[in-house]
Length: 195
Image (cartoon, rainbow, N blue to C red; front, side):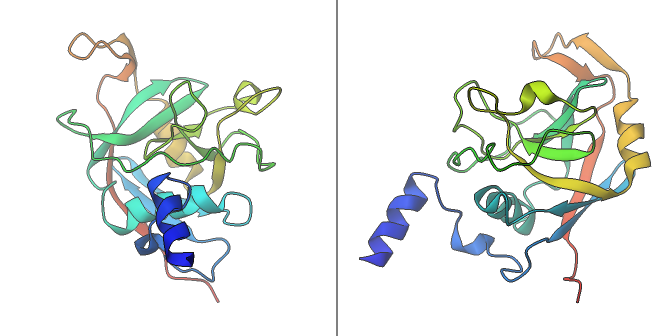
């Protein structure tokens, strides 16, 4: 019966795949982003956002974020990535996950959160960095955007990424706020667990 329930939760996207169990006894795993402008280290929060962290670590673990671009930059607001390669080909996404925006973590400067569509439970693989204290993205009377970690090293690199010139409109895709020269996430890797 337990296997059946687990399978149902996986199908509904409410449970991360078993392969995503990276450092399962580490409540605060760290991931290093090697970008075209330098390195950023993010500390994830399994206590507050367990489903989101497992989902994110799954993509990191299989190398699916490697050689993707930051495709949306709204200065003073957000820097979004994780969804496209440098040819603007969408990366394969798994099932949507449950929205954990009510976890008490706020969309403050330097935090990382899940991007989603308008509907609340539609986040899959794309994420964004908050470039300001974005209280409008926190849950008030409805669903917000789930924060699941924070930059602990490389804030200067985040600032460099945030200062890239952004086009108001990208003619090829029709996207708004597209970086003129999109920064690349060369590699994302889980750092060894701290003792």
